[in-house]
Length: 261
Picture 1 (tube, rainbow, N blue to C red):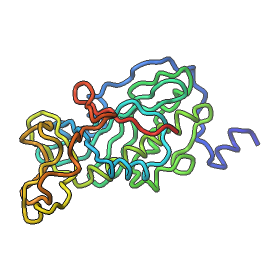
Picture 2: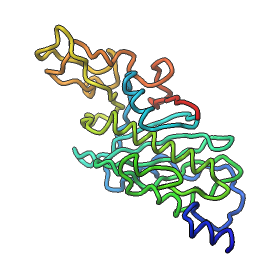
Picture 3: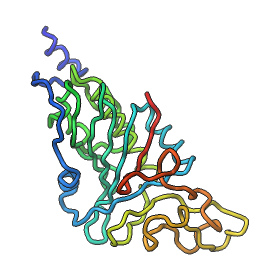
């Protein structure tokens, strides 16, 4: 039995015909990826993800081991007042350089096929193939996003396959912890901060307005925190923007360092 036949029979790898050496290049814009993932959306509202320490710990525990990441941006896909889902653009380390990819998660938590926006490695570009990318389509829950079990490897592109899969696990865990029940943002075109409601405080037991995030969070009209939220001021909100020191990257992109594998 040939090596290809053995791998196909055993299910250990997704066998794809050999391709030419990949040349580092940008393949897809963010706008094109958004439209490809949620074609029925009439707008995409950028979301600044503000995680408190407890949320960061929960995401890390759910997602499991991670490769180095460089940045993460997220948008809410809207059709009128309906939330269709979220688009995430993430960057993970391949073998030596970063891979930029996009994935959508719909309102029920199902992932889309991924889109590769930029691939900068000299080898392993087979992950851009439709067959491999479609393995993510319709997955719901982290128990269905296991590398080597649910998402098959491509011979010669192991690190790229594994690291992108781990990245999608991180994004899925992030959605579960911070966005699963988040309300829609105001339609003013500005990024809005998503965080947690204020913790219950001695004074906040009966309906004190608990604003989410530090004062001056993006979008005064779009900041989350309804009347009656517990807590005088959300304990999990100060310096709420994501980053090494709570800083938000250029153009509102949330820079999210993650644990190295």
